[in-house]
Length: 77
Image (cartoon, rainbow, N blue to C red):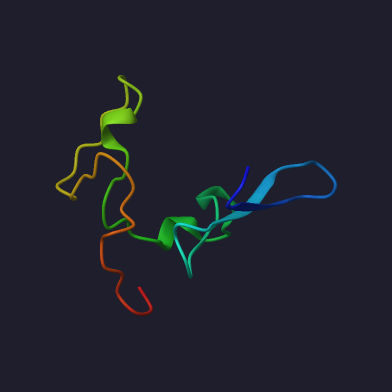
């Protein structure tokens, strides 16, 4: 796909990361790839209207109906 670069495992083909032209300076890594993902506290939910109908996340975090690319990022956070 134009504007997208993906990195996959050479052995099993699992996705490792992706970079999108419309999100400069950001690389997306699937959370399951991180050894200590449980220590990363979520700050918001993206694509909330696209979630599975049976998935109910009961917290007070902000919810975006699309990407959160316009949401300011904290340095180091």
